[in-house]
View 1: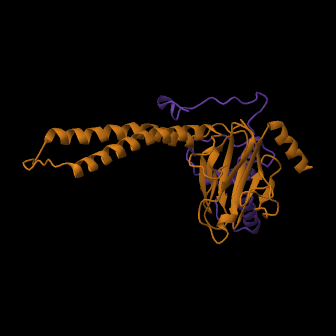
View 2: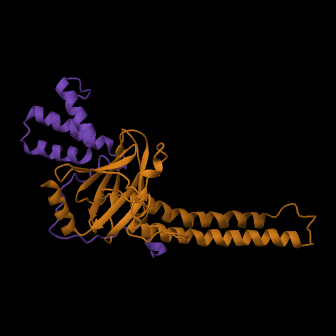
View 3: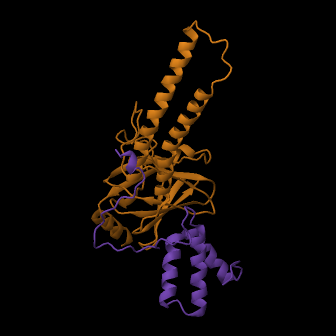
Length: 226
Length: 92
């Protein structure tokens, strides 16, 4: 989860996040090089007393400063598209979970476990040992290292379901079912918040995901269904 | 850290061998993120199958599994009601 004064990404907990963070670092390499070069030109030209009054055209330099950005953009777009389609790809899922956005809470359905349904409302900030605006009364519990299908939809307005440390975000659109791969590589508590302005309590419908072992998950599920 | 040449490469996921997928499988008719048609089509398929055979028929059970996995509960209960009242718009 994010903490105070954090300027980097949250710790990665999935393959998607690993890819996205590495891709971000890779792009920052170019951005920083371009910005420093441009700044250098600007400052240099301002402080420079030389002027080339007779310069009307220079084909060579035009060709160079067109071709170099072209190659840079190609270098960036190739992994970008590859990751985009990688995230879209569905691995064979073990079971499905449906996340339904409501004004203003999330509800989850486990269709393979007797259609077990939970509603997740935000907790009151009563105890000082909890995370304000992030904790919910019920958690979405998943087993880790098992690939699951998450189906996101809504019943009223557009919401958006996201867990940043898993590198996933998808809009919950009424009348439409969006699918994504839910996969966590380690156990833990992961937090997210609704990411589409959905009304007055938009800030108060957090997502709390608990990733645990398959054994614990099944135990929890059996207790619920009994 | 993922290398440049490895970005976006599929990784093999190690899952316990005794786990069998028990949900709707990937369907090449619906390769997109939008799975709305997968839900609706399998709901229709189930009811057509039920009309032709019966609910206990093997293929019908499969369609039922798929639509329960894909459709939100609110949608299917709504459609079930419509079928009962005879005003379901789909072609069954």
